[in-house]
Image: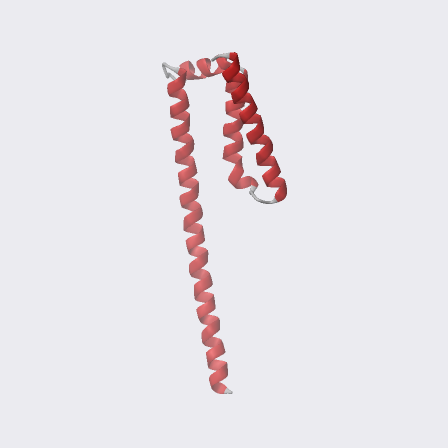
Length: 117
């Protein structure tokens, strides 16, 4: 990795980390949602600051080329993101169903009260 690319990657990772904390502080993002991204940004920062670490990590888990390790980690990360989004979607679906049932129940109670009067 050339020094120029290293500096660009470090700058982008630091900018992403700072922007993430700004969004958390403004309430635009929740810490639970952002935590995996912060971990990725920190890993990118570590790999950019210490390029030999990526070589060592790749060989430690049996991956021949460090570039393949980047793809491997990206696939794992995206799998976790998709899993988390699926869980969130399921929870939202449950909450929506519960709200619909409560609204229907309340509408029925209002209708019954108006029929009595």
